[in-house]
Length: 98
Image (cartoon, rainbow, N blue to C red):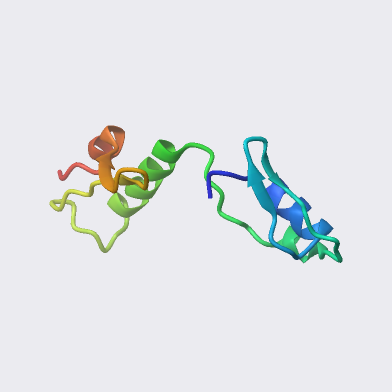
């Protein structure tokens, strides 16, 4: 969800419902159409900043009334190239137990 924005996804779907191509310049339409404007009504949940997204998620969990305050909440990013989980330090701070 990091490789495109809602606007890019909506534009691709408006042009064609065929699978788009991805190269060094981003996604581009390779279909012949028809497309659909229905993609404009979907929140594609794209991610601008991975670490900020993790911090937002941990904050939401930390503040949820069903999560006890004495349980720490951590946030990680899955590095798909190495297979490792990388802790987001800022998420540790907001997710600390009290």
